[in-house]
Image 1 (cartoon, rainbow, N blue to C red):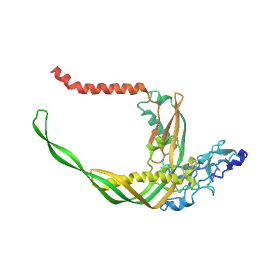
Image 2: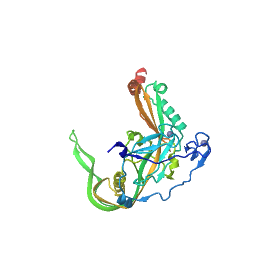
Image 3: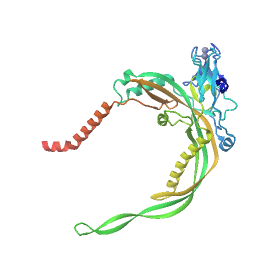
Image 4: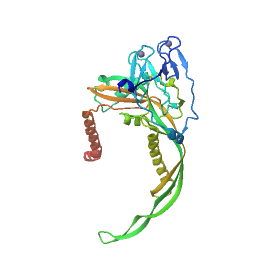
Length: 367
Ligand SMILES: [Zn+2]
Ligand SMILES: [Zn+2]
């Protein structure tokens, strides 16, 4: 088999400007497609997706993982051909930089149902980065001046979002504290009394009900998962029905974690919430869950794209990452640590603590 046989040609969307032909891109400030060359604007027809959730049982029954062959796309603007990595949903032409949104192929398992549009602009993300860099107290003093921002990229990352009605039959061991007065003989041989805590245990069975919505699972494999944990959550009241226009001008990833695995992860999250709910519902000082059986009803899901800004920057030949939630503007990043600053801060705070602790004695000595 030659390599050309394993490479597929992907069809892509471009959004040419009606006035000048330039590639239009999504504009966060007014939620339009905007031409970066002549500022012509076009409205995007979309809205809040009230019926976004799909039946999960049906989807899992017919679900098959889409194949992950490498793909290339042909640029109508310049004729260049760019290779797409298997998880790319939108990219830029390597030669002319124009934005391409990959058209969903018929064999693709699940296409996005909803999108959270970018609510922050590139300028805002850049400004947020500068402010953030200046506030890194434990970073070397030279960081704010000498770092190099390699690239700042807006990117949509894929999520699975799940809902379910759950009913759980459970058996718990419940401990209730009570106190008894004990008498004892102290070291001088005198009789004393004291309160001693005891626990009375009994077994209880019961049912617990909880409805879950928007339990989300990140559907890609990313090196900066820890940073993403810090810039979540997203606001689920700000959803739009998916349209390709929303990702024009940004990178977008296809999911790498399949739907069934996504559900397994969501079920783990629900399970934790259910156990907490049971402990809260049962009145007791200690509640041990002995067994439980969870029934899921009306399981639903949808596939969502959510926006983040990612920048890598260099300092002393090492690379660090900065991220910002493209919707809520929450920021997080990795940065170099100046051990000189850390150690001197610890020494200084110890000194202050000692000064406070001995301060009174000092004043008394002066008296
Ligand atoms: Zn134009
Ligand atoms: Zn091109």
